[in-house]
Image 1 (spheres, helix red, strand yellow):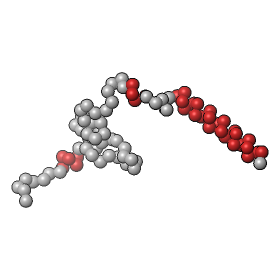
Image 2 (image 1 turned 180 degrees about the vertical axis):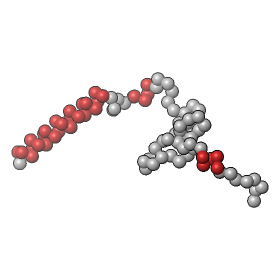
Image 3 (image 1 turned 60 degrees about the vertical axis):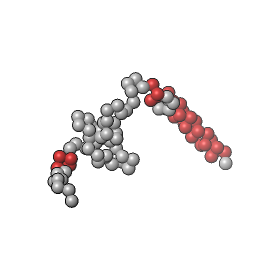
Image 4 (image 1 turned 180 degrees about the horizontal axis):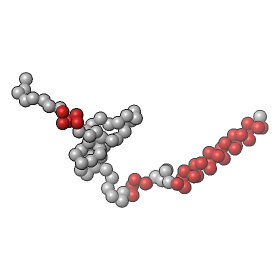
Length: 88
């Protein structure tokens, strides 16, 4: 065995990462010193998107006008289905 004593106290007392996992729980990794995320979720130096990243909005799927257009299409489809049900 090794001659050093294991003291996990400081590790267990450190603040935890605030990210959410795919299962909905919290990430259990310790946060990077001075940050709220662990090294895997954006706490590491150089991680994350660069400032003014235009690629983050590349497809426009979540733009306000795209969402409004999808709502109108769904409403129109509901009306068409209701009309077709009435014709039977």
